[in-house]
Length: 605
Image (tube, rainbow, N blue to C red; front, side, top):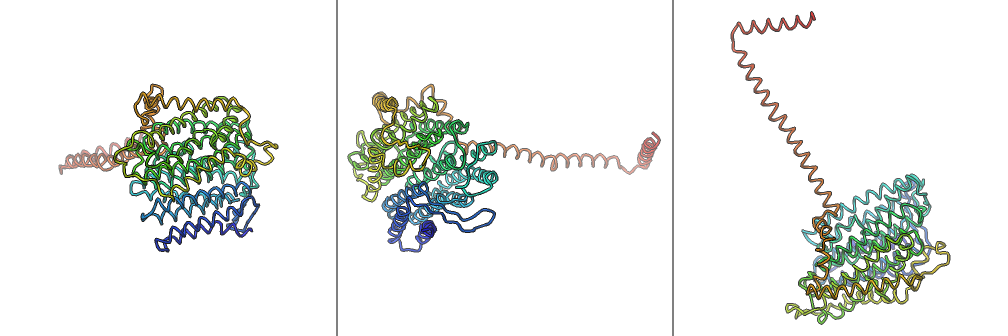
C-alpha cells in the first residue's frame, strides 16, 4: 500500500512526458487513460492512512509522504476535476497544434499537486509547490506571444509570495525543531506569528486571494480557456486552501481570540468585496468569471479565519463547491468561445436558442455561485455567514453585500450572453459538442446533489477533517439561524429586482451595472482600479521604473562629473599654466622666489 504513493505521483508525470512521443491521433486517448488511472487510484486510496518515508537529503529533509482523510479528499477532487478537463479539452483543442503541450502541462500539474498534498515534509512540499510555479508560467505562455507578459507577471507575483513561504518554512522549522508537518504544533508567539503569516501568504497567494490576484484576470484573456477551468478555478483553490487549513488546524495553535484570526477575516472580506466589485463591471465573459474566482476565495479565507468549527467547515465546503461550479462556468465560457468565436459581451446575445444546453448548465452553476437554494453554494455560504456573524457583524454584512453583487453580476452575464434578441451574425452557431457538454453536465448535476443532499459531501469529505473539534456536531442541512436564511433570500430577491429595474432604465443587460460603475460613491474606486493602482505588480513596475530613472540620472550625473566637469576644469587649468609658462626668465625667478617664501613661511611659523 505504501509503494502506491510513489506511482501515484509518477504516473501523470511520466504520461505527460510521453505525450509528444505518440502519434497525434493517439495522444488524447492516452492522456484520458492516464487521467482515469490516476482518478481510480485516488478513489482506491481515499480514507486510507499511509505514511511513507525514506532518507532524502539529510538534516531532517526526508522524502516523507502522508495520506490521510484530508489529503485523500483533496487528491480525489484534484484528479476528478483534471479528468473532466481532459475530456473537455479533447474537443476544445481538436485540430489545434497546442493540444500536446497543454496535455503535458496538465498531467505534470496533477503530479505536482499530488506530491504537494501528500508531502509531510516542508522541504518536499516546497519542491512540488515550486514545480507548479514553472507549470503555471508555461501554461499561460501557451496563449501566444502576448501571453508571455502575463505569464511573467504571474511568475513574479506568485514567486514573491513563494519567497515568503520559503522564509516561513525556514522559521517554522527553526521554531519546531523539525520539518515534519504532522509533528508541528506551534504557539502563536512573536516569532510563531511571523512564521504563521509567512506561510499563510504562500497559501492564500496560491489560492488567488488579494493582493496576489492580479495575474488571474490577465490570464483569463490570454491563456487557453481550459487552463482557467483547471488552475484558478480548481487546482490552485484546492491546494492553497488545503495548506491554509493545515496551517490553522495542525501547525499552529490558531484560536478565535487570536489577532491573526481577525487578520485572516479582514483579508477574506476585502477580497470578497473588491473582487466582486470588479467582476460586476466587466464586459468580457472570461474576465468576469476570473474576478469571481478571486472573490469566492475570500469566502473560504473568511470561513477558516473565524477559527470556529462551523466557519472552517463552511470554508472547506465552499472550496469544494467553488471548484465544482467555477469549473462549470469556465467550461460554458469555453463553449461560447469555441462556437461563437468571442467572449466579448458586447458581441454576444440571444444564444439560448442556439445553445440551450449550455444555457441550462450555465444557469445551474450561476445559481450555485450566487447562493440560490437548494444549490450547493447556498449551503456553504450560509455556514460562513453564520460564523462571520458570530465573530463580528461587519464581516457578515460585507459577506452578504458580496452575495448581492455576485447575484447581480451573474444576472447581467446570463442575460447579456443568452437572452435578448439573437444576433444575425450568430445564425449559424450550433450547440457545443457532447465532449464539452458532458463535463459541464456532470458538474451541474454535482451542484444539485451537493445542495439537496449536502450531508453527502459534509459527512463523507468535510466534517471528518475537523475530527474532535466538532464535538459531535453536524452542519448538514440548513443553518440553525433561520433569520440569516431569510436575509439571504431577501438579498437574492433584491438582486433580481435591481437587475430588472436597471435593465429597463439602461435599455441593456450589459449596462445593468453602469450606474454603480459611474456612481458618485464608486467612480473614484473604479478609476483607480482602471489605472491599476490596486495591482501590486503594476505599481511595483512603476515604482521600479521611477527608481531606475533616479539612478539613471545619478549615473548620468557621475558620468558628467568625470567626463565633462573634471575634463573641462583640467583643460582650463592647463591653459592657464600654459600661459604662465611663457618662457620668460623673470617669470621663472618670481615663481621660484614665491615658492621659497611659501616654504620658509611654513617651516618658521
